[in-house]
Amino acid sequence: MNATSPSTPPDGMPVYRVLTGPDDATFCHRVSEMLALGYELHSGPTVTSNGGHVIVAQALLWPAGVGGARAAGS
Image 1 (tube, rainbow, N blue to C red):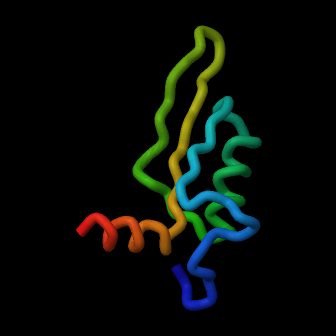
Image 2: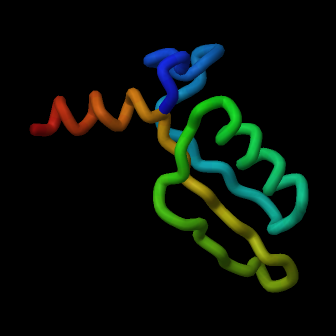
């Protein structure tokens, strides 16, 4: 997180997000938009198939939320 990032996500967005959808350019753009806002990837993506299409999921965390959650759980 850079020094200019706020301590909470913008527009009331949650600290933890999971994006899901077909494995396509639209999904990649959605993840990229969250990274540009300041979210960080939480582990790697999950990939499955619904019988005809590949479906992906990616968890993202707001950096300030991670520190707060760890500090609260210590």
